[in-house]
Amino acid sequence: MRTPPLASGGLDVGDGHELHWEEHGNPDGVPAVALHGGPGSGIGQGWLRWFDLSRYRVLLLDQRGCGRSTPHAGRTTDALRANTTQHLVDDLERLRELRDVHRWVVLGASWGSTLGLAYAQAHPERVRALALFSVVTTTRREVAWVTRDMRRLFPREWEDFVGALPEAERHGDLAAAFHRLLVDPHPAVHQAAARAWCAWEDRHVSLSAVHDPRYDDPVFALGFARLVTHYWSHAAWLGETELLDGTARLHGVPGLLATGQGDVSGPPDVAHDLAARWPDAELVVVPDAGHGTGAALEAVVREAVSRFAALP
Image 1 (cartoon, one colour):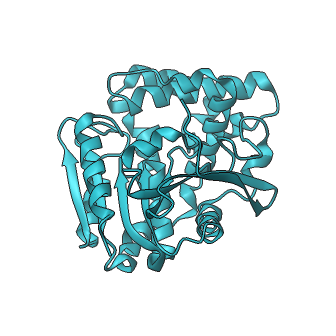
Image 2 (cartoon, helix red, strand yellow):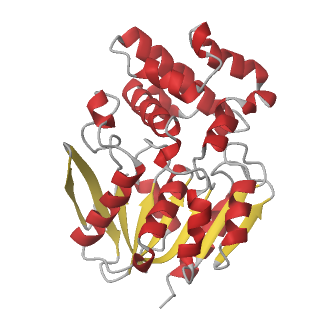
């Protein structure tokens, strides 16, 4: 059941994009913003579970091209125009100014952790704390791991995944190869590519191979696959060590970097390497957790978010 928000609206960010946002919780509470994964997953009220809404004023935002933002990448490739990490960072600043927020707690998971780091490094004075879990930085090394090197764990499923590509496209950048199919104007081509991409996501994100029912919606599946491959084929328009080196700008910003020991989609070395360069961050590796899953991982995140509410 959806909870009526305190406020909601559409944020015109230019370039033909309008972003859906909602505000929940205590209007006098600590401001926070939640950054969804994907890119392209969209936000939902399930993200409110990380916060004590009696203490927090939480902003939810569908990033460009997904959720209830328009245009939607599952309906038109126009949603991919003017859609880069820097655009999303600028969108967060527009939302912060629109809602008259001085500083906020930034919560991000998976792709949201990449975006959270990019935003915080660009605007550290606006960040009270960062709570990041299932941490990734969307480097070319990480993209190659998920799309190619993970064959070592799931060889049969990987062969099905790559088998959806023409033979000539199977030996280079797999995210870029899929993206070319996903933006093909013929529905038979882009729909088949979306099904193959999302089947691979189902396999590596959940070690128990739990099906994500969102992929049953062809509009969601196509939009998600288009946005992920759009960002991954460009390594999020970030330098290979940009977010790692940028931790120097987070001096004095408290952080949580929580990751599952069994997270194969966002291996723990990513969070470990960030924590080694960011003294104000706490690294927590949860033994029995995967990518964004597990009660123990959720407990770690909730405890940190609760603690961050008490910061000055």
